[in-house]
Image 1: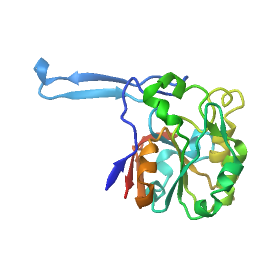
Image 2: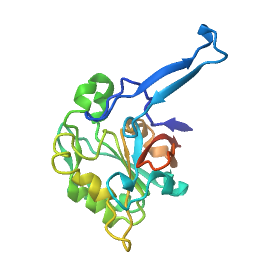
Image 3: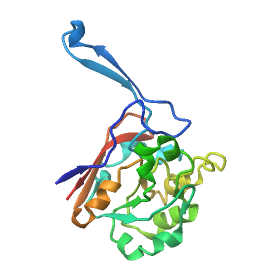
Image 4: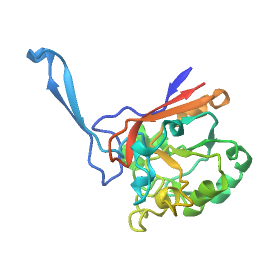
Length: 228
């Protein structure tokens, strides 16, 4: 069975407050006598369900076109329920409780439950949502060699209020290349519909999260699908 966990794109989707909005418009229409229906979109790479590559916060990091396609396929996914309220942090201690399970995973999907507000109250969904502590990000990056990616059910791993003023430390903890000798980073999937995963977690076999690659880009929209 296939379960889609990417959200549908539209001009009205919740987004990081400083991001430009999505725009879509009709360029040709059968109703107007054109030979076909055709449309164009303006898309911001960090709106909707997307993946951040290291280049997003690292001068020497890989862009979205530089990452092997195998890195977007996950044969050992793990979803954990880690309920968090407004402004709460995902901590190292939270994650350490699942250490033995995470050790076997190639993608860690964290369902905070805050995404329930995405349809109910979009403005609250993008306001002071749960996010990672820097220590938690470092713990995941350096303690689990099999792990390739993190997926989260909110719009960013950094808090919308404190992230910008502090220079987005959580993104950097996950993505910044420390040296040529230690290039390992983790991909970040944000704004993912992980509630669907919690409903089928006993049967999950794999996740495909293939990006739409754009030359020189630091991120990409993804079609994210669970195989169960």
